Image (cartoon, rainbow, N blue to C red; front, top):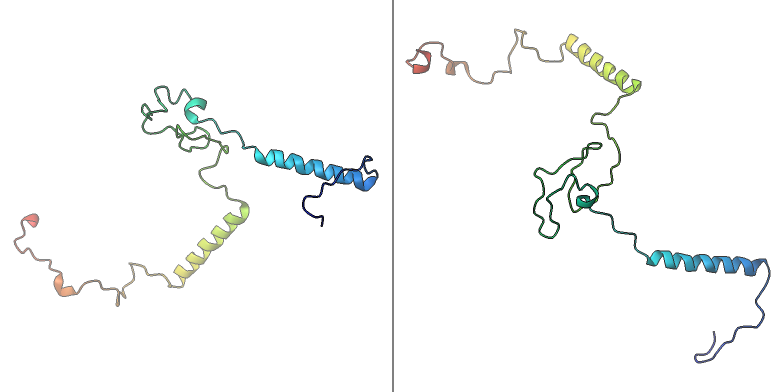
Amino acid sequence: MRARGTVVTRPDKEPEGVLADEARQIQKQRQERRIVSGRKPPRPIPNYICYAFLFPNYDPKTGKGCPRPLPRCRVCGYRIDPQEHHDCPGFTPKYPEHDEEWHERMEARQEAIREAKRNGLFFSEDEDDLSGYEDEPEEDWCDEDDGDPMWE
């Protein structure tokens, strides 16, 4: 380590060789990275400028004149806000497409449900034995007309 305040001069002759060339190249790349990293990416253009036909009466200073409800993208279906920038990811299907394996799994599942019904594991309303499934006691039920105006 050199002492502070000491002036170091460069040699008159630049170093040569493979290592020196590689070092220059690395130093140049580092300088370019510093320059690029200092730059900010350009701001995206807001939708009221990109899609002016969707926002003909929109005033960005006051925010008035925006159509209600907000328009939606015809491709992806996302809402287009006037102050944001819409980067359309492209068409996204509303329902997923299923492959043959999925169909086979669903058919196996349906078959398992059918088999369980055949074995009596599911409750069915047409069975005579309804013990344990009573919701209300029988004395609450009355088939007689008790003067209720609805039944008259």
